[in-house]
Image 1 (cartoon, rainbow, N blue to C red):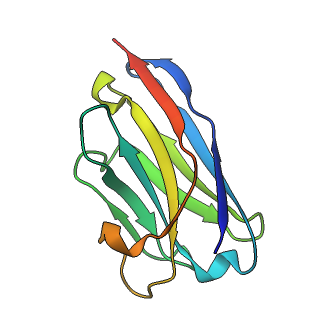
Image 2: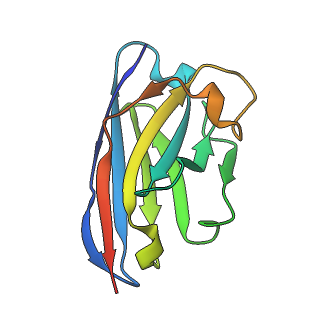
Length: 124
């Protein structure tokens, strides 16, 4: 298992930017595919972006494609989510998650280690 701690959430105006970080502890961070999810009140948790172990492959949901960028620094055991052009509908709790399943980035169920979440609120 890997322990995950998110940071970087907060309140931002529409059109603004935030960068979320997720620090991992435990062995072999580079063996995990990583993902960012969000859950708004009354809605299901949504997979937003994912990145492969090496960082060479990424996936984005249509809702964030072109606005959000996922990246990782394996030397720092950290994955990032750069969020630009934020909209009020991006308001949610954002979670990072880890998966050991090789070759699968687009299926939520393969992610089995979770952080505690960080709140992002976008005002109009």
